[in-house]
Image (tube, rainbow, N blue to C red):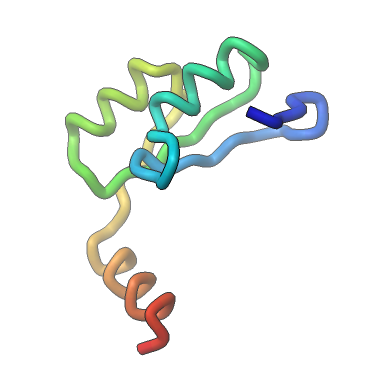
Length: 78
């Protein structure tokens, strides 16, 4: 993981990402930068929120389904 905690003030991550899940990223980050604040997002429900907090996220937020649907349409070009 190429990350320089001295250059970053905050990490915002999602629960589900290609290549690495949010909890895995947070655990790896905590080993290198234990004091860096982490905000985690998820649209996958309360279980995913608990996983993010257990991994070391400082805060978590649920994504609004309407925002997620709009984002998907925008990225698809519709």
